[in-house]
Each structure stands twice: as structure tokens, then as C-alpha cells.
Image 1 (tube, rainbow, N blue to C red):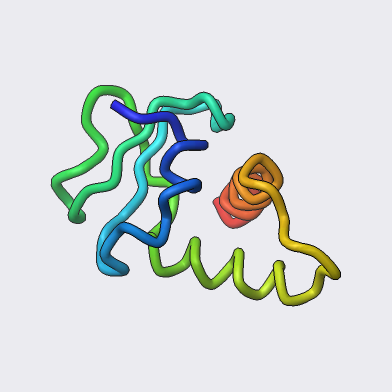
Image 2 (cartoon, helix red, strand yellow):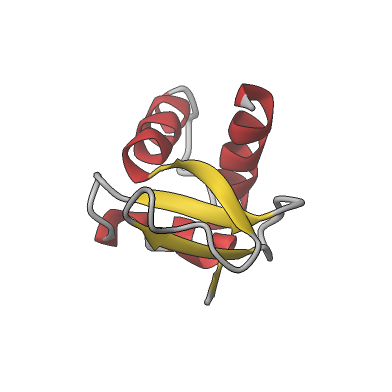
Amino acid sequence: MSRLYDIVANLAEFDEGLTIYAARPWTAASDAVVAQEPEGGGDGETWFMSVDAARQVLEGWADSLDRSPSIAESTDRLIAYASNAA
């Protein structure tokens, strides 16, 4: 099992067709897994967002900054996005 922070740190390694599942409440330390839909989400994890959507959110946000965001900032950004979209 990984933490959500670790998945965000390695987001480029995952196939865009996969989905991120994470245990609530969503924090950087939440247990998380990347899996095919609908197989994922076991062991208390709930749907978080697709890998493709996470990349798009982070790319659009990073383009608006004058620096590269940290992994912690990127994780927080995805949590805020997923929380508001739910």
C-alpha cells in the first residue's frame, strides 16, 4: 500500500487509463492505490480521481505558477480539487 503523497510523486509512472483510490479523509498520508476501474477501491479506499485527470489538473495549475510546485503542494491541490468535485 502506498500513501497518496507517494502516488502523486510518481504520477508520471502510471498509465493514464488507471484510477487513484484513497482512504478518506483524504490527506497526503492516506493509504492509496492505483488500479483499473472497477477493480480498485478495496480495503477502505474510495475513488479519488483518474490518473489522467490528476495530470491535467496539475499541469493546468503549474502553468499558472511562476515556479514548480512541490510534491506536497501538488498533493494538496489534488485533494482540494477532488474534495470540491465530489
